[in-house]
Image (cartoon, helix red, strand yellow):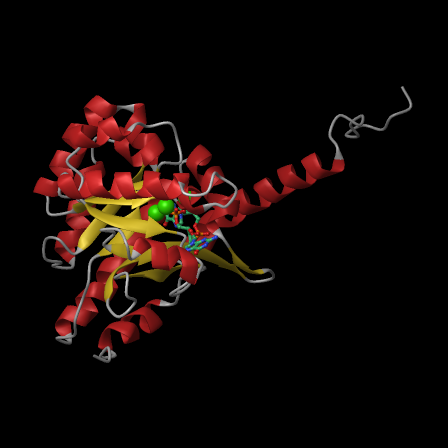
Length: 279
Ligand code: C2E
Ligand code: CA
Ligand code: CA
Ligand code: CA
């Protein structure tokens, strides 16, 4: 046995080992990072299809690491969903959103509904809704200003339980959105059984490469059906004027995408609400 103690044979490739080290590093520092204010959120505006009015915003978390800069959620959300830290991070983001809304209300300035992402882990906790209600009430946020986004995959996992969850959310004064709709295998049919306020169409719908015209028909059909069910519709990931031109021929209520704005700091988002749109 020539190998020294602690040395492992080449079981892990370098990329794999790097990923494990990265993971350990993020996990070691996450608690302190929350205490030291390294997490913050941006808000991406949701515009009407003409791009003149901001009708809402979505809060999106970021991690500002001292020696590294800004890290995006794709790098840490999956990890935090595994280790449970996402529960506290989501609550932190929600509380930050409520604080901003409160400041706007106190100043008598205009507000619009702001959505936050709710990880699947919350839904398995009996005190999930009461925690969110407590935070909302502590900041005195009126009903209908806070929106909770649940991804299609969560919704499909437990369609039956989801009806009750969404129903309780709405009775507690939250708007309820189905996020990433169309990214999985869910059929249009599930929509009629869900009491959602908002349907967010996944940006996969807009990807090039499908048969010309086909995707447009699908998007139009989903939007029409959602409208009939009295849901507001948001098209996500709209990047080009061409996509926008198509959406203007549909009943789509809101557009969220780089074509209008990237996620921006809350101050910048709220400045958009204070700028009077030209007629
Ligand atoms: P999502 O909820 O689907 O959020 C939309 C993502 O699409 C955001 O990425 C946004 O920056 C990006 N996006 C917006 N417009 C465009 C566009 O025109 N083109 C393209 N290519 N992308 C666009 P982001 O901020 O990196 O967030 C990624 C995902 O991380 C989110 O997807 C959401 O699932 C998750 N996430 C973000 N913040 C939170 C949070 O506070 N809690 C939880 N549980 N998940 C979060
Ligand atoms: Ca979302
Ligand atoms: Ca989405
Ligand atoms: Ca997505």
